[in-house]
Length: 116
Image 1 (cartoon, rainbow, N blue to C red):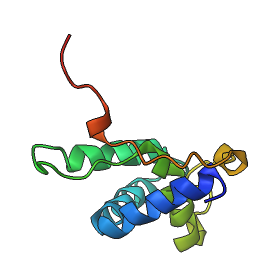
Image 2 (cartoon, rainbow, N blue to C red):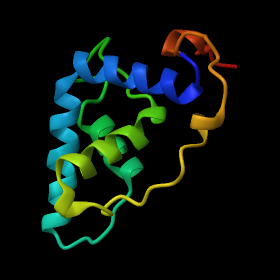
Image 3 (cartoon, rainbow, N blue to C red):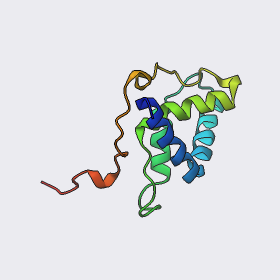
Image 4 (cartoon, helix red, strand yellow):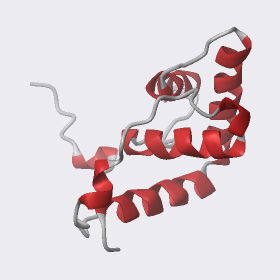
């Protein structure tokens, strides 16, 4: 990997292949907003809805969705449904200009969950 963007993209692609149901929910929830008359919507809002619908109680030990993936899901949606290009407002992906970290993706196990 040469850039941070390459790393995140590879991680996102691996996640996407392991959890195709996330893409199905992403498309479903995006079209719910489109069909409700929204011209634009928050990709982060869609991700939070997916998290809500697949909460840990219903998905013990299940997947976690990394916020780094939002840009890739939004761009994929625009590519797959070009008639809705612009539904998600996109920013420049600054990771394209950053060197690769060559570090593994952080998972929930990396965080201290002890209560203080």
